[in-house]
Amino acid sequence: MIYIRAIWYTKQKKSEGIVMFYAALYNQTEYTFLKSTLRLSSLFEQAIVNRWTAIGIADQNMSGAFKFYQAAMQNNIKPIIGLQVFLGAYPQESPLLLFAKNKEGYQRLLKISTLQETKSDLLSFQYLKEHQNGLIAVVPVCEHEGPDAFFKGQLQTFIEVSKQLQQTFSDVYFGVSFQTDIVKQEIKPFLDQAKQLGIPALFLHKQAYVKKEDKTAYQTLRAIESPGKNKEILPYEQHQYVLPQGEVEKYATKFPELFDNLLKLVDSVDVTLSYQGYQMPRFPLKKGL
Image (cartoon, rainbow, N blue to C red; front, side, top):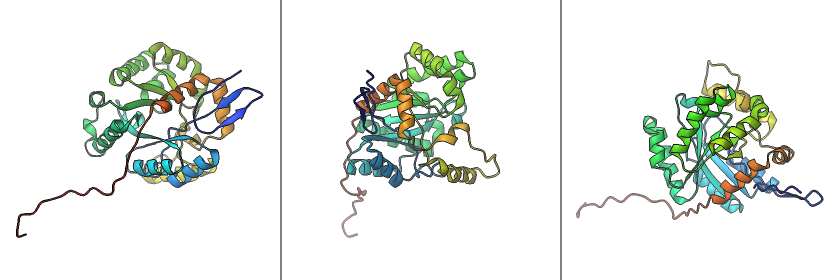
């Protein structure tokens, strides 16, 4: 009997004893300008059709976070609010995902997002270490320089980067997707090394468009953002569509521990926000004015 615990849709196979749930945490939406064709409305259409019970967002800013939260609550879906930040020797290649565990974490994400937009040079591992309360860090293995070093055979670099992440965050995961050939080929050695380091791994499929055929529109956006550069998108970008149920089942059967850890993260999140109207600053005037 197999019992796979994760969150997204519900599917029961009584004859096989399988109960499966999955949460799509890594969604980048229209608010990550020129890097996604995925609208919030389309994302929640997928959520309703597939009966998702939890869903995440990880844009490069927090502009759509509250709108995402409201839409999730209206559809009775648990919202997992995140932010993509950039750190490391090559920031453009080293994204890190930060998810709010509670309201304090959400407020910290707002501050970090503002810092990244206005004073990115001040965003450092030391800063995040001092402001990590209420946050969960997830390292996307297809994009971050640490896992990339492992897949290139640079084990010591991978270990050093991993230890830096552990020293920075008390709650950190490796986010594993199967969107590149090298990850598919080397996933078992990677998971063994992650286990030795004491960093749990969870399933993390990046989504930036709805269907496979939407890749062309996505590629066009990327070309607009970087005119004159090579218009070919990176290997993992070829597969950033909403993952079909059948593919999720395949990975969940092979790597149940990734889905167990996914559920652990989702269960640890409890963010409650309220809307009390627009809060405008007050400027008292002197009498007679």
